[in-house]
Image (cartoon, rainbow, N blue to C red):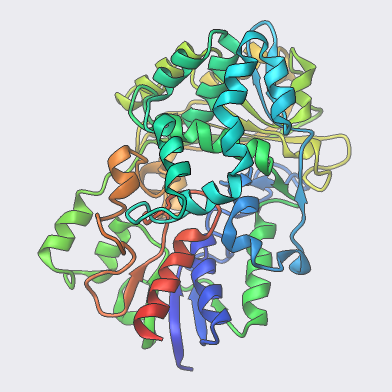
Length: 471
């Protein structure tokens, strides 16, 4: 069968590219190397029967906020969003601070920093739709809302440590913002790390930090069923090792990172572009543990049970130290740990009365060091007795993450380091970074703008570019 477009990779961006082209009336085929679809949206029984664990992505504020996903009738194809009582908890040794869905409630809990917190987030939350469309788009173009983006940039281009110390007085507010900003997987004294704290905080108040019922696999399944309804074909267990293996089509879109593209193109790319891709920087890796638990986590502060996500790292100073050690090639003894407790709000994730827990920390790219002891040390610090409720666990180091998904090179789950330079130069500096020098071949992965996350916008913009060029 002949196709108008072929797409390699069934992550959110591969699906977004395929669906965008299929909606435009073109015949599309999507190829996936693994036996199941989804990329970073897979859910598996990694520990014990009946315990469903998200292999990679788990909490989806960008999935609900994405302008692309919002256009799709995914609820008709089985996708249901669940909002935890609170998006986020950040425990400290004496108490936990919560980011509530309500900006006002969160500010009230921060005491003397409440007004500063409202001042920082209020205008961004109230204009969240405009901002989301702006930062989930290529940055090398004139923004639709220049004054709003200028105000955002005034804060976003600062480092996390600078902004937190300038605006806040209390350890609670500083720690809360540091935990948000540490999603950048960068040293928190680096420029633009504040942008991650601003975006994730804004999303928490504007749309929440939802979880998909049944696991992230349900997002992939809904996307697949919708693509099939549009006439698209999906082929699993089909690893593409060379572009010449693909059926001839008017456009080829690749949900892969620069490293894989260089391998698939095998000398077909001009030297200048090859050199540019070879300079592309991958970020730190992750070490991940999935737990099957006999009961809910025994947090010292029971308010943590209201949150779908928990940031474990202590104070701003402790999180800064952890991420600095990681960036210098060391493994932190007290790492910043991201935790998701989906089964508290989704009873389909575990047998009755039992629970799952999802946790990872940042490590140097390519690390094979087992961080179980360090992660469990942090869990025991804020939830004494945690080890006693563990029924089973499953670990993945950075090399194993890459084996699971080659796009996670060295365990980098974001498709490339989120440095200030690579927010613009992704993977090359261009007003259309999706185009490649090869005729009718486009990149559509998280190594292109706007970068990592389950939002599909990289694939959407790559497909729009292909439509402009060819169709």
